[in-house]
Length: 269
Image (cartoon, rainbow, N blue to C red; front, top):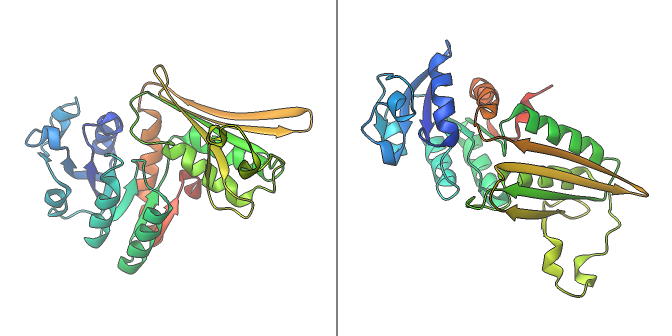
């Protein structure tokens, strides 16, 4: 039985994930974290039936209860500290919240290896979004001219999305040298060319982030070659249900190896 702590239990994904953890025969929810719902039954706070687990306000309170895995679907400004706190307590961690950068991941990897625990972080736990990344990475090996358009709602607090950042970093590592004129050779307003994300041998991949109403989360990899284009795109709907299956898979397998693994695709195939 894998004992699970869920941080962000009343958030968009947390509300969908909590009943799925409870329904799993080999998982046991032992603690739920939500500052706004502290003191309530976790099931009721997530809009489901009571489950006999009380919501606590802080991760420290949750980690005082014996557990195996922390699943964090909180906020960009706290997920890094939460992850390091859980690692220090000897827990494996599934990171579902976005907002972490390369330096954050390096610290997390070092801490996890030192404590011999596993961390799995993914910009998107949807199976179809993971397939989009897989297909885009394959295309990037053959078509080096690629840029990403990252769409999200007007209120999303971080940019780019975890999905867009993870995809750009992964493609930067495998693509060849593009033909676009370097930004430092451009006139006008060079910032309109987007941000280079990733540290590959041929530089980062340009990411353009749109934040406006009517979008939930969409990521589009646009490839250009001589007289032809290829677009690989994933669109998320208004429900968090697509992220549940991938997160459950991560919970089951996060302990397989120490250190950080990035992307749900590391568990697929």
